[in-house]
Amino acid sequence: MEVVSSSHSCLAFNRTPSSAWRFPGNGLGPGHAKLTRPRSAILCVRSGIASNPADSGKVHASHGFYVSDVDAALQGIPKKVGEIEKMIIPSLPEGPESSLISTGFWEWKPKLSVYYEKSGIDNSKAPSVLFLPGFGVGTFHFEKQLKDLGRDYKVWTMDFLGQGMSLPCEDPAPKSTSGELDEDTYWGFGQELQPWAEELVYSIDLWRDQVQHFIEEVIGEPVYIVGNSLGGFVSLYLAASCPHLVKGVTLLNATPFWGFLPNPATSPRLSKIFPWAGTFPLPSFVRKLTETVWQKISHPRSIQGILKQVYADHSTNVDMVFSRIIETTQHPAAAASFASIMCAPKGQISFEEALSRCQRQGIPISLMYGREDPWVRPIWGIKVKQQVPESPYYEISPAGHCPHDEVPEVINYLLRGWLKNVESEGSVGVPFLEEPSYAENGVSRELEFVRGGSKKSVHVRLFGSKISLWSQLRSLLKSNTWVISR
Image 1 (tube, rainbow, N blue to C red):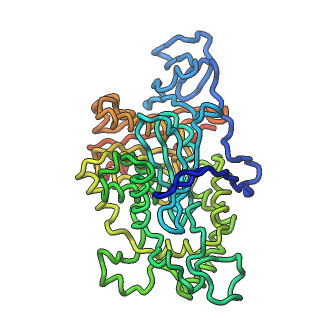
Image 2 (cartoon, rainbow, N blue to C red):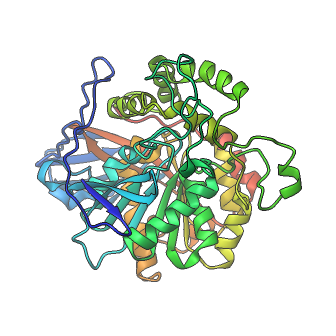
Image 3 (cartoon, rainbow, N blue to C red):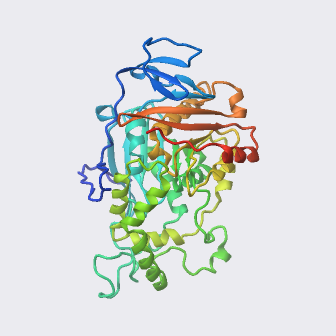
């Protein structure tokens, strides 16, 4: 681990992660389930059924496609499955094939250090890609991108302040008198506000500034930003505010709104109506409400239920995600940080305005959304596509709110293709756009990959630019539900 600040050199430390919490029976530790790839097999695809024909290596147009699978030879080769072409894409790397991950803390402000992870830094000529997490998770949610994409790019991710391992190391508002709460219960519930926390509020404006300074002071060059949920909003917000720092944005089920209270910079009079907007110390009524709410939502059973809700494929192993979330909730500053986040003002510009600014400034945007997301429903992705019709919009099914963790093979494949397209200034095509008509009318693919020794397939639809909103909605209603092959 390294510690970075504007006035301090890097220091080496050892990190011992806590992984005490596990889902019973799943057995996922810090690593992933072992992935295997068939050494040599003959794959026959006929209406989606695989077999081993005797006449291996031959292609019979009247009976489907027969392709010899020798290591990566099959990867990216389309095969007809009914009216939808099937493509075999790479599996996640394992063992020594994976890119190494290093960690560090960046001291941005006094008492406020940002935890980050990086991979592939030796790829000096490759572009930098920064992943921003959703609310309640952190860097650990992009482990599969760090290990895989770090083989080709310089990959970074960080925890937002007030979340993950970027929680404060000291109490922002200690208790003035003892006896109200146990010493090890909550930070930020007292009245003695510390000088370093006088203007602290965990808002989307703070996170935008955090990412901006991280790019400028730590990464040191413009980046591609990939954001999931809250991270998607922050990605777009930063790109709209600092276009010189952003080479492109990929939204993964981005939340289209954040915060409810008026922003004091844009609505100074209206904001004065609300006496408290996420600052420290917490008012007494907020402390009491937070205690009640926090005890319920931080309970392991509640967290397990949320994960079950947002992951469409319940066979996905989320042990590590679960344990790291639990680890964060046990931090003494977590409850007060949650209260600040929930009551912080909204950003100075809306999601729609940020999207419009990015479009006017010519910032490339791509959209990759899980179709079965219970929170950011498909209509939100379609609305974004309607506002930026020139941007590729991939709808993935089955996949929920976190497609990068649920189907990382698909997200990594699509990201690689999109990054190559932008870096080459269009000389390398966007994935699926083999024919010009697809850009207008759209196209569907079935992507197959190997995970844990078993084949899985995911349906991916690339929406065209000339399809009306009503047509897309009607297609969504009529389309069949796709299920991962088990």
